[in-house]
Length: 455
Ligand SMILES: *[C@@H]1O[C@H](CO)[C@@H](O)[C@H](O)[C@H]1NC(C)=O
Ligand SMILES: *[C@@H]1O[C@H](CO)[C@@H](O)[C@H](O)[C@H]1NC(C)=O
Ligand SMILES: *[C@@H]1O[C@H](CO)[C@@H](O)[C@H](O)[C@H]1NC(C)=O
Image 1 (cartoon, rainbow, N blue to C red):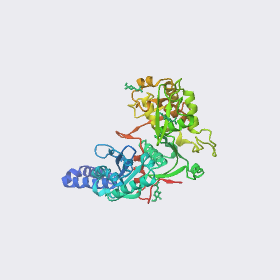
Image 2 (cartoon, rainbow, N blue to C red):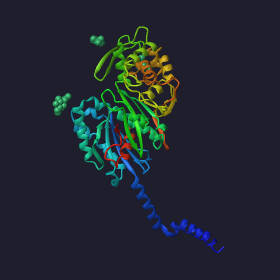
Image 3 (spheres, helix red, strand yellow):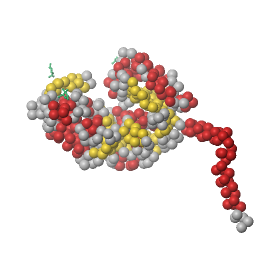
Image 4 (cartoon, rainbow, N blue to C red):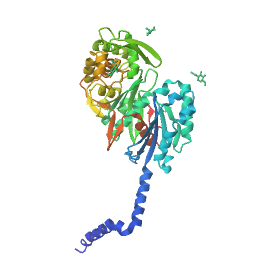
């Protein structure tokens, strides 16, 4: 009795004392505790500033992460986002003016990052299609002017953080973005999702494979690795990633026109005659007298994809490219960019939905339907399709179907998820590479370089 009674009493005493101490201690003590908590919160906060230098404009994203790499709000939103037009590629003759065009974006970024945290916040710029097409001398001059500007900022700067992104960088970062937003990055590779990103110039496929498969992975024709090693929050991933240059949607149109001829082309909607320009080359285009045909257009798409090109690996996708071996990391595929856009435009999915499940079969059905229409009928039916895209609507859908089914060898009734944005907490976040680039930068802050490296 003597021994057991005082213990609960002591606990009770402590409980009462501890739970009431802030009010007993008065406002001074409470505010000291509060500011101590603020300090430690701020201390684990990490910001990253990512410029996306696209062909039509430049954008800045500022993200903020806590110590466990969760996204924290920046101002009222989940990120700071600001954009300007035109893009850096419009400044070929005046690189300094190009760099200066970013000043307002840089100031906006500075305004949301506390002064004390800026020197630890990486600042990066990734240039995509527009600058890639300018040629290396011109684009390097522009990037050098940008380096000059960013190196003078108060953020953590490295010259090699200002670069032209390769298609496979874009694909890798998008993989990181999507898996991060889905909360997959703490689990092993079989729980991650694969990504297909159909841009205008290129299409990317990225998915995680096992370490064992990675060590045995072959090299590309140019001797590059198909696999990138990625270290995020202490978990290592081996990413199979390949960017098919000239197989983005706008580029593929040109490939199909080259493969089967532009005049009397069976992919062009009945009633159209005009010119198609891609990457400086002009093609004469006209519909066939009998109008477009799903089957004939599909044969053209197969030819453009070089589906029969010899394969020196166990299995290829198309054009003699290794397919990565498949596996659990590719089982669930998220499909982005033009796949989403066209699906929304022809009503395969509701454009209000930020993501939706479909089957490759749906593209086939949509293509079969659209290819029967004349240009005029399509114009009346699909009012959200830009007029310049309209003659190519059958071609685009046939190409998307052929790419999924024959190129990437998906089953017609396999579910894929079309995605433009994903929900993160109460915010919608764009399915795009900048967030992945920010995550890569903050995860590798202690390391000397990017965590993303070729195997
Ligand atoms: C690029 O610059 C190098 C040297 O600075 C020059 O030799 C080369 O001809 C230039 N190339 C183009 C395409 O202008
Ligand atoms: C394309 O059409 C234009 C007239 O619109 C013609 O002058 C040109 O020769 C044609 N080019 C080809 C390759 O047929
Ligand atoms: C499409 O429809 C719009 C108005 O509805 C019209 O102005 C335009 O000329 C049409 N385009 C074609 C290619 O039929």
